[in-house]
Length: 292
Length: 64
Image (cartoon, rainbow over all chains, first blue to last red; front, side, top):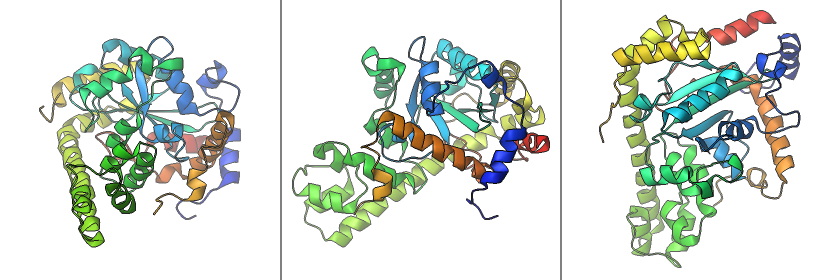
Protein backbone atom coordinates (compact mmCIF):
# COMPACT_ATOMS: atom_id res chain seq x y z
CA UNK A 1 0.00 0.00 0.00
CA UNK A 2 1.49 3.30 -1.07
CA UNK A 3 1.43 6.40 1.04
CA UNK A 4 -1.86 8.25 0.66
CA UNK A 5 -3.88 5.39 -0.79
CA UNK A 6 -7.33 4.94 0.67
CA UNK A 7 -8.34 1.58 2.07
CA UNK A 8 -12.07 1.99 2.61
CA UNK A 9 -12.82 -1.66 3.31
CA UNK A 10 -10.12 -1.90 5.93
CA UNK A 11 -11.25 1.33 7.51
CA UNK A 12 -14.88 0.24 7.58
CA UNK A 13 -13.92 -3.09 9.06
CA UNK A 14 -11.93 -1.45 11.82
CA UNK A 15 -14.77 0.89 12.63
CA UNK A 16 -17.31 -1.92 12.74
CA UNK A 17 -15.34 -3.93 15.24
CA UNK A 18 -14.01 -1.25 17.55
CA UNK A 19 -15.85 -0.55 20.75
CA UNK A 20 -18.08 2.47 20.86
CA UNK A 21 -16.24 5.30 22.52
CA UNK A 22 -17.35 7.07 25.67
CA UNK A 23 -18.10 10.32 23.87
CA UNK A 24 -20.63 8.61 21.62
CA UNK A 25 -22.39 6.89 24.50
CA UNK A 26 -22.81 10.20 26.27
CA UNK A 27 -24.11 11.94 23.15
CA UNK A 28 -21.46 14.64 23.10
CA UNK A 29 -21.51 14.98 19.33
CA UNK A 30 -24.48 16.16 17.31
CA UNK A 31 -26.34 13.69 15.13
CA UNK A 32 -26.05 15.65 11.90
CA UNK A 33 -22.98 15.94 9.71
CA UNK A 34 -20.77 18.73 10.91
CA UNK A 35 -17.13 19.67 11.07
CA UNK A 36 -16.00 18.15 14.36
CA UNK A 37 -13.49 20.94 14.90
CA UNK A 38 -16.15 23.62 14.39
CA UNK A 39 -18.33 21.76 16.88
CA UNK A 40 -15.49 21.64 19.39
CA UNK A 41 -14.97 25.38 18.93
CA UNK A 42 -18.60 26.04 19.83
CA UNK A 43 -18.34 23.80 22.88
CA UNK A 44 -15.09 25.35 24.13
CA UNK A 45 -16.71 28.79 23.93
CA UNK A 46 -20.21 27.90 25.12
CA UNK A 47 -19.70 29.54 28.52
CA UNK A 48 -17.61 32.45 27.23
CA UNK A 49 -14.80 33.09 24.73
CA UNK A 50 -11.79 30.92 25.55
CA UNK A 51 -10.44 29.50 22.29
CA UNK A 52 -10.23 30.95 18.77
CA UNK A 53 -10.11 28.60 15.81
CA UNK A 54 -6.93 29.04 13.79
CA UNK A 55 -4.64 27.59 11.13
CA UNK A 56 -5.99 24.88 8.82
CA UNK A 57 -9.55 24.84 10.13
CA UNK A 58 -9.67 28.63 9.83
CA UNK A 59 -8.71 28.14 6.19
CA UNK A 60 -11.75 25.86 5.89
CA UNK A 61 -13.86 28.47 7.70
CA UNK A 62 -12.84 31.08 5.11
CA UNK A 63 -13.68 28.56 2.37
CA UNK A 64 -10.29 28.49 0.78
CA UNK A 65 -9.73 24.76 0.82
CA UNK A 66 -10.84 21.48 2.35
CA UNK A 67 -7.75 20.73 4.39
CA UNK A 68 -6.24 19.91 7.77
CA UNK A 69 -6.96 16.78 9.77
CA UNK A 70 -6.17 18.62 13.00
CA UNK A 71 -7.80 21.39 14.98
CA UNK A 72 -5.73 24.33 16.15
CA UNK A 73 -6.80 27.02 18.54
CA UNK A 74 -5.38 30.11 20.17
CA UNK A 75 -6.43 29.60 23.77
CA UNK A 76 -7.11 32.54 26.01
CA UNK A 77 -4.22 32.87 28.43
CA UNK A 78 -6.14 32.39 31.67
CA UNK A 79 -6.41 29.45 34.09
CA UNK A 80 -10.17 29.43 33.55
CA UNK A 81 -9.78 29.04 29.79
CA UNK A 82 -7.34 26.18 30.25
CA UNK A 83 -9.69 24.46 32.67
CA UNK A 84 -12.61 24.81 30.25
CA UNK A 85 -10.63 23.33 27.37
CA UNK A 86 -9.35 20.46 29.50
CA UNK A 87 -12.88 19.77 30.72
CA UNK A 88 -14.34 19.58 27.22
CA UNK A 89 -11.50 17.36 26.03
CA UNK A 90 -11.72 15.12 29.09
CA UNK A 91 -15.43 14.53 28.46
CA UNK A 92 -14.45 13.20 25.06
CA UNK A 93 -11.81 10.84 26.42
CA UNK A 94 -8.89 12.87 25.08
CA UNK A 95 -5.35 12.14 26.16
CA UNK A 96 -2.24 14.27 26.15
CA UNK A 97 0.25 13.84 23.37
CA UNK A 98 3.89 14.48 24.35
CA UNK A 99 3.90 18.26 24.69
CA UNK A 100 3.78 21.08 27.21
CA UNK A 101 1.01 21.16 29.84
CA UNK A 102 -1.97 23.33 29.02
CA UNK A 103 -1.09 25.83 31.72
CA UNK A 104 -0.51 29.57 31.48
CA UNK A 105 2.97 29.22 33.00
CA UNK A 106 4.20 27.52 29.86
CA UNK A 107 1.72 28.83 27.33
CA UNK A 108 2.91 32.39 27.95
CA UNK A 109 6.41 31.26 27.02
CA UNK A 110 5.19 30.20 23.59
CA UNK A 111 4.83 26.48 24.26
CA UNK A 112 2.10 24.40 22.60
CA UNK A 113 -0.13 21.67 24.06
CA UNK A 114 -1.42 18.73 22.04
CA UNK A 115 -4.24 16.23 22.60
CA UNK A 116 -5.86 13.34 20.80
CA UNK A 117 -9.06 11.32 21.01
CA UNK A 118 -11.42 9.33 18.85
CA UNK A 119 -14.82 10.66 17.91
CA UNK A 120 -18.03 8.63 17.83
CA UNK A 121 -17.08 7.31 14.39
CA UNK A 122 -13.66 6.29 15.66
CA UNK A 123 -11.91 9.01 13.70
CA UNK A 124 -8.72 10.45 15.10
CA UNK A 125 -9.23 13.96 16.44
CA UNK A 126 -6.10 15.96 17.19
CA UNK A 127 -6.37 19.25 19.09
CA UNK A 128 -3.47 21.70 19.34
CA UNK A 129 -3.28 24.86 21.47
CA UNK A 130 -1.05 27.88 21.86
CA UNK A 131 -1.73 31.21 23.54
CA UNK A 132 1.14 33.20 22.05
CA UNK A 133 1.58 32.18 18.45
CA UNK A 134 4.65 33.57 16.72
CA UNK A 135 4.43 36.74 14.62
CA UNK A 136 1.05 37.75 16.07
CA UNK A 137 0.80 40.84 18.29
CA UNK A 138 -0.66 40.72 21.79
CA UNK A 139 -3.26 43.28 20.66
CA UNK A 140 -4.44 41.03 17.84
CA UNK A 141 -4.71 38.09 20.24
CA UNK A 142 -6.68 40.12 22.78
CA UNK A 143 -9.07 41.23 20.04
CA UNK A 144 -9.96 37.60 19.32
CA UNK A 145 -11.82 37.36 22.58
CA UNK A 146 -13.73 40.63 22.48
CA UNK A 147 -17.50 40.29 22.33
CA UNK A 148 -17.68 41.70 18.82
CA UNK A 149 -15.33 38.99 17.57
CA UNK A 150 -17.10 36.09 19.22
CA UNK A 151 -20.58 36.12 17.72
CA UNK A 152 -22.36 32.79 17.95
CA UNK A 153 -19.69 31.53 20.36
CA UNK A 154 -17.38 31.06 17.43
CA UNK A 155 -14.12 33.00 17.73
CA UNK A 156 -11.88 32.57 14.69
CA UNK A 157 -8.67 34.33 13.75
CA UNK A 158 -8.96 37.09 11.16
CA UNK A 159 -7.31 36.72 7.76
CA UNK A 160 -4.25 38.84 8.56
CA UNK A 161 -3.57 36.87 11.74
CA UNK A 162 -4.07 33.66 9.80
CA UNK A 163 -1.52 34.81 7.24
CA UNK A 164 1.00 35.50 10.01
CA UNK A 165 0.34 32.06 11.47
CA UNK A 166 0.96 30.49 8.10
CA UNK A 167 4.41 32.08 7.73
CA UNK A 168 5.98 28.83 8.85
CA UNK A 169 8.91 26.75 7.73
CA UNK A 170 6.64 24.71 5.46
CA UNK A 171 6.65 25.70 1.81
CA UNK A 172 3.06 24.55 1.30
CA UNK A 173 1.73 27.24 3.66
CA UNK A 174 2.81 30.02 1.30
CA UNK A 175 0.35 28.95 -1.40
CA UNK A 176 -2.42 29.32 1.21
CA UNK A 177 -1.09 32.77 2.13
CA UNK A 178 -1.34 33.83 -1.50
CA UNK A 179 -4.98 32.80 -1.65
CA UNK A 180 -5.82 34.34 1.72
CA UNK A 181 -4.27 37.60 0.57
CA UNK A 182 -6.61 37.60 -2.44
CA UNK A 183 -9.52 37.93 -0.02
CA UNK A 184 -8.08 41.18 1.37
CA UNK A 185 -8.52 44.69 -0.07
CA UNK A 186 -5.80 45.46 -2.67
CA UNK A 187 -3.91 47.84 -0.34
CA UNK A 188 -3.52 45.00 2.16
CA UNK A 189 -3.12 42.22 -0.39
CA UNK A 190 0.10 43.72 -1.70
CA UNK A 191 1.61 43.56 1.78
CA UNK A 192 0.99 39.83 2.11
CA UNK A 193 0.65 38.14 -1.26
CA UNK A 194 3.13 35.44 -2.23
CA UNK A 195 2.13 35.64 -5.90
CA UNK A 196 4.62 37.56 -8.01
CA UNK A 197 2.00 38.39 -10.64
CA UNK A 198 -0.18 40.03 -8.00
CA UNK A 199 2.77 42.03 -6.69
CA UNK A 200 3.51 43.30 -10.19
CA UNK A 201 -0.15 44.08 -10.90
CA UNK A 202 -0.86 45.74 -7.57
CA UNK A 203 2.35 47.79 -7.57
CA UNK A 204 0.99 49.63 -10.57
CA UNK A 205 -2.32 50.46 -8.94
CA UNK A 206 -2.10 50.57 -5.14
CA UNK A 207 1.66 50.36 -4.61
CA UNK A 208 3.16 52.54 -1.90
CA UNK A 209 6.34 52.49 0.15
CA UNK A 210 6.64 48.99 1.57
CA UNK A 211 8.97 47.11 3.92
CA UNK A 212 8.80 44.20 1.49
CA UNK A 213 11.82 44.05 -0.83
CA UNK A 214 9.73 42.41 -3.54
CA UNK A 215 7.17 45.22 -3.51
CA UNK A 216 9.92 47.85 -3.41
CA UNK A 217 11.55 46.21 -6.40
CA UNK A 218 8.27 46.21 -8.31
CA UNK A 219 7.65 49.84 -7.43
CA UNK A 220 11.09 50.83 -8.65
CA UNK A 221 10.44 49.27 -12.03
CA UNK A 222 12.87 46.39 -11.55
CA UNK A 223 12.72 43.45 -13.91
CA UNK A 224 10.34 40.60 -13.25
CA UNK A 225 13.33 38.36 -12.51
CA UNK A 226 14.46 40.77 -9.80
CA UNK A 227 11.01 40.82 -8.20
CA UNK A 228 10.88 37.03 -8.32
CA UNK A 229 14.30 36.80 -6.67
CA UNK A 230 13.32 39.31 -3.98
CA UNK A 231 10.13 37.41 -3.24
CA UNK A 232 11.94 34.08 -3.04
CA UNK A 233 14.42 35.60 -0.62
CA UNK A 234 11.58 36.96 1.56
CA UNK A 235 9.89 33.59 1.78
CA UNK A 236 13.12 31.76 2.49
CA UNK A 237 13.94 34.17 5.33
CA UNK A 238 10.51 33.57 6.84
CA UNK A 239 10.96 29.80 6.64
CA UNK A 240 14.44 29.88 8.12
CA UNK A 241 13.35 32.14 10.98
CA UNK A 242 10.51 29.77 11.84
CA UNK A 243 12.78 26.72 11.75
CA UNK A 244 15.34 28.46 13.94
CA UNK A 245 12.64 29.29 16.49
CA UNK A 246 11.31 25.73 16.58
CA UNK A 247 14.82 24.38 17.05
CA UNK A 248 15.21 26.42 20.25
CA UNK A 249 11.97 25.01 21.68
CA UNK A 250 12.64 21.44 20.66
CA UNK A 251 16.11 21.39 22.21
CA UNK A 252 14.72 22.96 25.39
CA UNK A 253 11.97 20.34 25.54
CA UNK A 254 14.16 17.24 25.31
CA UNK A 255 14.56 16.51 29.07
CA UNK A 256 10.86 17.09 29.67
CA UNK A 257 9.67 15.00 26.74
CA UNK A 258 11.96 12.13 27.72
CA UNK A 259 10.37 12.00 31.18
CA UNK A 260 6.87 12.48 29.76
CA UNK A 261 7.36 9.45 27.54
CA UNK A 262 9.09 7.39 30.24
CA UNK A 263 6.09 7.90 32.52
CA UNK A 264 3.63 7.15 29.73
CA UNK A 265 1.54 10.25 30.34
CA UNK A 266 -0.05 9.92 26.91
CA UNK A 267 -1.73 6.75 28.18
CA UNK A 268 -3.29 8.26 31.30
CA UNK A 269 -6.70 9.88 31.81
CA UNK A 270 -6.41 13.56 31.03
CA UNK A 271 -6.73 14.94 34.56
CA UNK A 272 -4.04 12.66 35.94
CA UNK A 273 -1.76 13.27 32.99
CA UNK A 274 -2.19 17.01 33.35
CA UNK A 275 -1.13 17.07 36.99
CA UNK A 276 1.86 14.84 36.33
CA UNK A 277 2.86 16.87 33.26
CA UNK A 278 2.81 20.05 35.33
CA UNK A 279 5.06 18.49 37.97
CA UNK A 280 7.54 17.26 35.36
CA UNK A 281 7.46 20.63 33.60
CA UNK A 282 8.27 22.47 36.82
CA UNK A 283 11.53 20.58 36.99
CA UNK A 284 12.42 20.07 33.36
CA UNK A 285 10.67 22.53 31.03
CA UNK A 286 11.90 26.15 30.93
CA UNK A 287 8.94 28.51 31.00
CA UNK A 288 10.46 30.94 28.50
CA UNK A 289 12.97 29.40 26.09
CA UNK A 290 12.96 32.64 24.14
CA UNK A 291 12.86 35.88 26.12
CA UNK A 292 10.81 38.81 24.90
CA UNK B 1 -0.89 32.78 -11.51
CA UNK B 2 -3.42 31.12 -9.23
CA UNK B 3 -1.76 28.97 -6.60
CA UNK B 4 -4.68 26.70 -5.86
CA UNK B 5 -6.75 24.90 -8.50
CA UNK B 6 -10.35 25.70 -9.38
CA UNK B 7 -11.36 22.53 -7.56
CA UNK B 8 -9.73 23.92 -4.43
CA UNK B 9 -11.39 27.28 -4.78
CA UNK B 10 -14.99 26.51 -5.70
CA UNK B 11 -16.05 26.34 -2.08
CA UNK B 12 -17.52 29.79 -1.77
CA UNK B 13 -20.73 28.85 -3.54
CA UNK B 14 -21.47 25.98 -1.19
CA UNK B 15 -23.99 26.31 1.61
CA UNK B 16 -22.81 25.81 5.18
CA UNK B 17 -24.36 22.35 5.17
CA UNK B 18 -22.70 21.43 1.88
CA UNK B 19 -19.27 22.52 3.01
CA UNK B 20 -19.67 20.64 6.29
CA UNK B 21 -20.59 17.51 4.36
CA UNK B 22 -17.71 17.94 1.94
CA UNK B 23 -15.22 18.37 4.77
CA UNK B 24 -16.72 15.46 6.69
CA UNK B 25 -16.41 13.13 3.69
CA UNK B 26 -12.83 14.23 3.09
CA UNK B 27 -11.98 13.77 6.78
CA UNK B 28 -13.57 10.32 6.77
CA UNK B 29 -11.43 9.17 3.86
CA UNK B 30 -8.32 10.90 5.19
CA UNK B 31 -8.35 8.65 8.25
CA UNK B 32 -6.81 5.95 6.08
CA UNK B 33 -3.52 7.84 6.00
CA UNK B 34 -3.30 8.61 9.73
CA UNK B 35 -0.29 6.45 10.34
CA UNK B 36 1.75 8.38 7.80
CA UNK B 37 0.93 11.81 9.16
CA UNK B 38 3.66 13.87 10.81
CA UNK B 39 3.65 13.62 14.58
CA UNK B 40 3.07 17.36 14.95
CA UNK B 41 1.90 19.74 12.25
CA UNK B 42 1.45 22.85 14.42
CA UNK B 43 2.99 24.41 17.48
CA UNK B 44 6.57 24.37 18.68
CA UNK B 45 6.97 20.62 18.23
CA UNK B 46 6.31 20.79 14.48
CA UNK B 47 8.73 18.57 12.62
CA UNK B 48 9.56 16.56 15.71
CA UNK B 49 9.28 12.82 15.16
CA UNK B 50 7.66 10.44 17.58
CA UNK B 51 10.38 8.80 19.67
CA UNK B 52 8.51 5.55 20.02
CA UNK B 53 5.65 3.83 18.18
CA UNK B 54 2.31 5.41 18.94
CA UNK B 55 0.85 3.15 21.59
CA UNK B 56 -2.69 4.27 20.95
CA UNK B 57 -2.49 3.25 17.32
CA UNK B 58 -1.01 -0.10 18.35
CA UNK B 59 -3.79 -0.58 20.87
CA UNK B 60 -6.47 0.17 18.29
CA UNK B 61 -4.93 -2.25 15.83
CA UNK B 62 -4.97 -4.96 18.46
CA UNK B 63 -8.73 -4.55 18.84
CA UNK B 64 -9.57 -5.36 15.23
